[in-house]
Length: 224
Image (cartoon, rainbow, N blue to C red; front, side, top):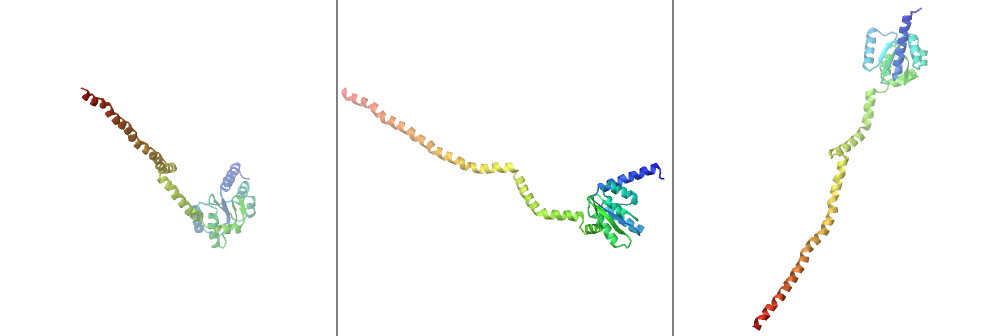
């Protein structure tokens, strides 16, 4: 009978494995029977570089962890030798790498897997393996939206170059201002020119009255 310390270690292993499974987007279970050390080392390296965590696990421990993670149906394939590849972010990496390796081996094979919290069969894993990498998928999406985004970016940059949207509005108002001010200026101009005409009338009247005042002086001379 296992000691209490061993049981506690196994419980911790199950809890850690369950957390890894729940925190991942996909995983693949394989029968690694027949793989040699060199191939195993190369496979682990490729999986690690793709961000996939690969480990050999006892079927009893994996069964308990899968049940805790809500993937009870994985227990149906837990026999023989078992290893699990867990992918935290990439949905296709584990399937693509392991399928490629399994196609070259007569003994290494895929058992089952899961995707977004649901158990999937070998056919589904084969389909995932045919999808492009996460980087290629992201690049494809970006290229699809590249043209509209570029046009929008150019329009925004044009507004920024002019000082922003607020700076564009005053510029239009200034362009209309001279036309509105021109009318009052034109109406005031005749009034300004009319002023000398009004001043000329009193001056003419004064000139006409001046000789009339000097006339009596001319009549007094013959009287003497």
